[in-house]
Image 1 (cartoon, helix red, strand yellow):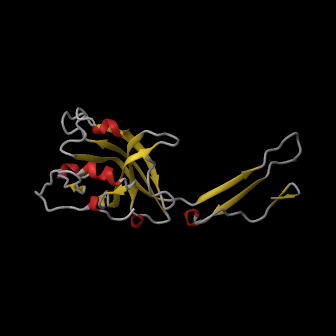
Image 2: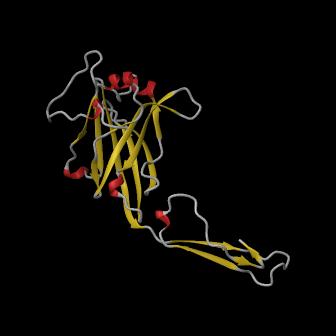
Image 3: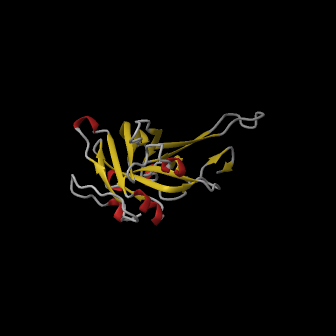
Amino acid sequence: MGASSSRGRPNQGQSKKSKGAVAPVAWPVPPSPMQQTTFKWRIDGFSSLLDKDEGWIQSSVFEISGLNWYLKLNPRDRKSGGKSEYVSLRLRLDDCSLRSDTVVEASFKFLIYDQSYGKHYEHQVSHTFQTESTSSGTSCMIPLRTLKEQSSGFLVGNSCVFVVEFIKVVTSKANDTIETLFVQKTNNTFSDPDVYTWNIEDFFALKSRDYSPKFEISGHKW
């Protein structure tokens, strides 16, 4: 998902009102000192974004806890096998913020702002970010038809506000992984239980399926 007109950021103070099929404008809302754990993404011209039906788009990069993140949005997502359209969100950690030996445990909330009544729609998520999984799972927030209802307060002046609020971010070193095969004694077949231990020095460097060296237990090779 590359750059699109939905990611442009106008000068502060500038605003655009929708008149027909106006290209969507999206930019992050600058946080105050008390909002360093929150990223707000305002999208103007939301109806034009629906007309384009581009699938997933993403915000500009933002920094939380010393890491670079992107908020991703799909305004016409569908659940597996379903026909109803949902407004869905994902959180992606920038590849440059991760190393193969690093794991980032994060808890956060997705919110769609109710700009009229303050009854925001939210969904809490926990995800382990690592080199093999830099994006959280898809969170189907609300049906698109609900967001478009005039009485909902989510879509005001053809503008929507999407938010990710971080609860906890913990970065840690990925420990060396040890895989142990236990051979259980059954019906006294073995006089003593045997154990084979496979030490993997750098588990996260593995690129595909791998096998241990051959080993022998109770006269059989494994």
